[in-house]
Image (cartoon, rainbow, N blue to C red):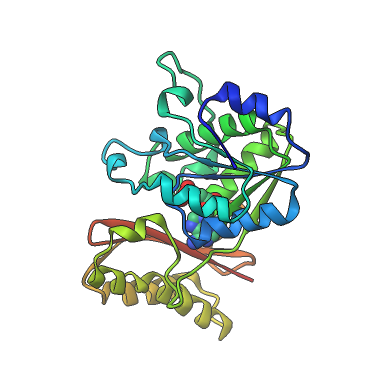
Length: 277
Ligand code: AMP
């Protein structure tokens, strides 16, 4: 496994590896969710590149990027075990030199949900992912459904800007009790970890009511809100039932519908989602 830290080296090595190339962008502190993407990439491509880069431009001024968990030695050991060929882990100054001033902005779909709560977040995401695609030039790039809106934004960027790669989406990997795996789960103390289950419980409730015939999104949302409000450590950012492609909010469940939510548990903001239909 090669560890590459500069863009020039990454581009040079890219010329020497066997096509097709599978690529998994991450911010590190890897868990089974990330590793499921790496395994799929490994199955489908003779060459696998994983990036580890905690992208400062997708964090708001109020969000503590310095607190983001980080353990490169552990990450590298996990990636080696999965048969990764190349790990690209550039320093921030390599990706954003002082004179950096170009940004990728994807339209409307970035205004709402995560985009509304975290202004500038998707501009940072689409810019760094565009840069990584240009540097790594993957044949296929793998993303998790856990970040449902991110998936929509990346797909839109790739389509609108005619990027030459396939975007592959894989299901959310969960803990045995249902909590979606996330690097941020490490912030939770035992009591908060228990409380965090409320996200999955609310999504499961919506799924259950919908499969019993409830199609009125206001009723579904109300049931979800009531359940979450019963958890004293939880405070709700948003609960949304939207068209799974446009993210327009729905009055009546039309398929496929994305049920997504952001909830703050203690001080930790968690997101999760399910697709109906
Ligand atoms: P991150 O390191 O949080 O930027 O995530 C890197 C990639 O892993 C993104 O495509 C995420 O959607 C994906 N990912 C994160 N958590 C999970 C999970 N629990 N299941 C599946 N994919 C995930």
